[in-house]
Length: 53
Ligand SMILES: [Zn+2]
Image 1 (cartoon, rainbow, N blue to C red):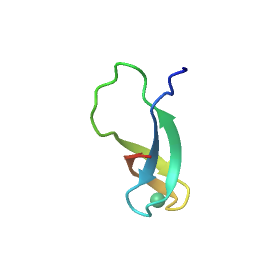
Image 2: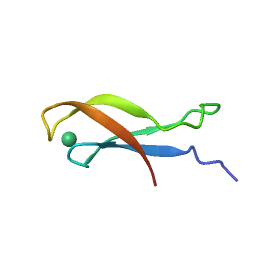
Image 3: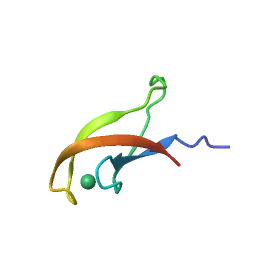
Image 4: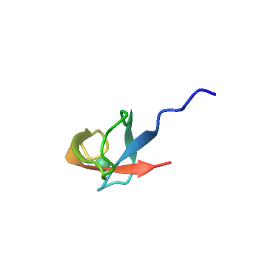
């Protein structure tokens, strides 16, 4: 069976919208991602938190 890549959503901490989808590459450390990304809803760069599922 094919293994699915674990994939994650990045949620804006301010408006709680899901703005980005990404997936973890193999061997990536199991820590919560917190990235600064541009949120089109807040119209600024905000912290985006990793959401599983
Ligand atoms: Zn936002």
